[in-house]
Length: 341
Picture 1 (cartoon, rainbow, N blue to C red):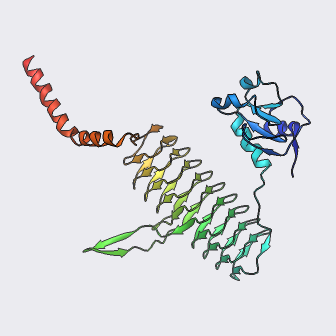
Picture 2: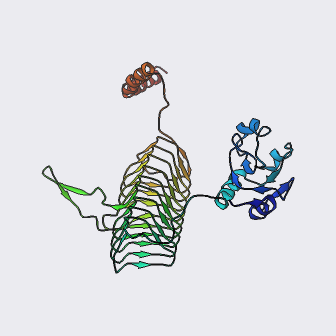
Picture 3: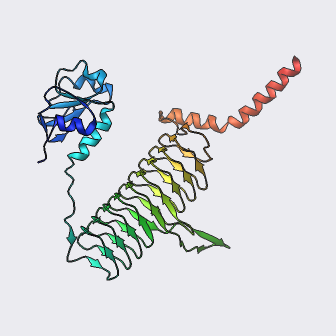
């Protein structure tokens, strides 16, 4: 079990120690569930009542919150960011043991960097390049001429098609498919004619993709996911989508083909972005929103209606259908009123 003192953590975080700097921390936990030897944090004022009752050995606090706390603390500007950094330091997530499992199938033309780990029943195709310390989980498939950068990890049963480039320090979770065909067809008198998807997928560095997410390959040019992007579980990224640096997309969202999402955007869970649109940098789309037109300016955008009693929803739906008629009647009344003036 890894141990680190409050003083050592303060140096890592640029924090101020309040209390016993020699106190040893072994893991992190919430205020409610922490025990001795654990470090907790207060990042939301609604949990302030749990602060005095916590059993944590120390707590990450802002300067304001620390002034009234009598226990051991690390005073930081942003307790949640501090928590994230300590959690990384004390992370106990298991890693694949370097080496190749006997049941893995590795093409002779593949190039493997030092420290690569390849799990049971994985398949590595022709001309694949795996950088140093890449971890390939059991049951993964990496297709022809794909490249995975150093220190990246594929959890079990990830499928990477051909001609996919993944940067360094990326994480792709189980069940995800990278580089599947985009949904490209021409219609000839009612019959669908498949358009071969000959582009690839280009994923930058420090990208994380959640479980059971699909990223389609481009039709001609590439689908692009830039550095620092985080993508949640069960998301569809269609062909030729471009996602800008450090954007976050929450679970169940759909990004249709050839749309471009800017840098530092946040797309709430269950949202849908129609095809061939662009979204400006710094846009926040709230959960369940349908984006059907270009967003040119930074800001918060929403479209979902709130939950309500079914009878009320039905009445409002009928009224919504009557809006056009109501609008026409109002315009007629306005003209009539002006005429009498």
